[in-house]
Image (cartoon, rainbow, N blue to C red; front, side, top):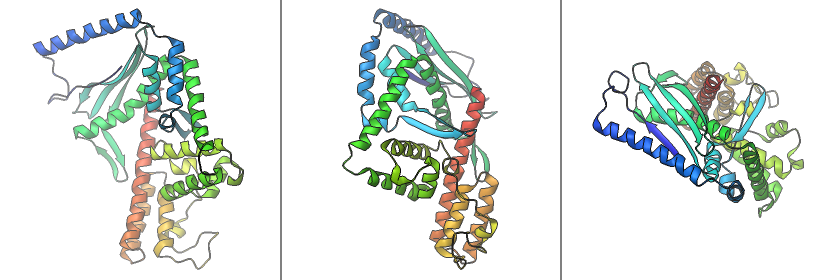
Length: 355
């Protein structure tokens, strides 16, 4: 059972103090619903054995397994675990649990929302809740912008709040239950590789090609990440690579954090020098220059780095060294990197709030 509530702000930025008859009736109805849910949870307790059986059946579905894991680096270590999709599936199967995300108060004057994420095992009377504040801000390449549109604010609150709700859900579920689910989901991913009609080498090649196409990640970078040549990879290695790719798609991890890239020098960006492993007469215009600028965008670690590279791209475009399409490719790479940096900063801010 899950609930998501949002309360609109008044003109002054806080919810109204006056309560009408309809509000009081709704509050009484909600209290009665809670009492009824608790009564039913204790009158019809869950069967852990049956819940585990249904959980294992669900974890055997490839559609769930492919969306079940996340992975991203933090402080030199790799953080991994179950996604909000997997957590919700597990808690629904476990049963007799109320969980949700609530916007308790929206303050338009100060530009922030007070949020509550919770999970309550009504049968065992165990509850985990987390309150936190979400500023109505979005960090972009051109600085921090304040959000005023209700849809943008709602999406921001949901994206950040889902992580806290996931943590609350996993706190109240039995550890043995969660570990069994993780093992079953990992086994499903591995089985999907082994049962594929395509040879393992072809699957590895296709996964690497997708990362190169979408993020410019090269096979040598992948080999360095996993510590052995692609020719010696196993099904487990391919599973981990796909999980990293999914985390990149969800913007939970930055490209250069997962796959460190060679530093791009100012001379290479300006087109006055070729990379060390490239011919010395490499062109300073066209596709070669576009790739250099795209690499610089993906390697950026701050908004100022993005702005500097963007300014270089504009100069080359105006000088005729880049076509409109090539400049657009560089701009797209910069926008993707900008979103990755913003997502990473939000994750760090949430981690600091949780701490």
